[in-house]
Image (spheres, rainbow, N blue to C red):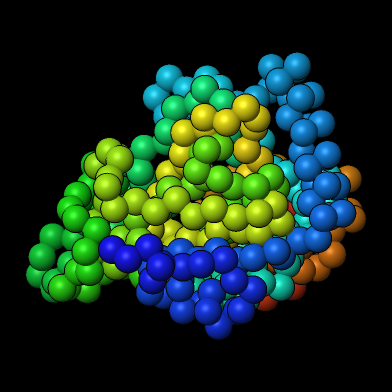
Length: 303
């Protein structure tokens, strides 16, 4: 595969859309200015240090086996208003709309900090839980029986039969430069069109796009990907705004986990992204046509 034909960092929205469609990923260049990157980095580093000191740095279950170096920070919308702008960024919203539709919400707003001495994450997809299509009369794939890592496996070449559509889109913000040396995200170009899962093993056809702080790498939920090996002398700071369709169960339980003092200061668009607005009645707490749901304490009980 000619590396020159693969997605290159760009600020052109049409090119980003085209790259996502063709390759399953794109690289958006210089979305944040230096001052914004610095403010996000300062808040992120301070939060990470405090969580480790308090033994609150929970590991992500799909991370590399035995990797106790990397750090995940969850629910960042609770941990600084400076993070909200990333979920609301017009390029992030435009690409989420392109892949998922005008109505979409946040599945997660987390950070992945990759430290030197980590282990490379196995290749995986973000929507392994999506059932494979089946022909009428065939036994269907029961979604509730699916288990991560059980396939179906295959090669990352375009399928000759129908495959499932994308239901999630991952937007990884580069808060530091992403380089091969510090473990930039690995992707398998075109794998989003295969309809199958990777076995987790590294591949010769991986790409590892680099980018400057303030840029982002974005991938379709079906694209094979994983973090890289950090052989540098410093951490790599990544922050994900992970979008999903409005009927998909979010990776993090946003409505339950949003702190009351944070909710009180959210604008309406952020409330919608966090799942506080019903979608065609789904996600309602009482009135299915309400603009926003009401908490349990305000809903009708036994009369």
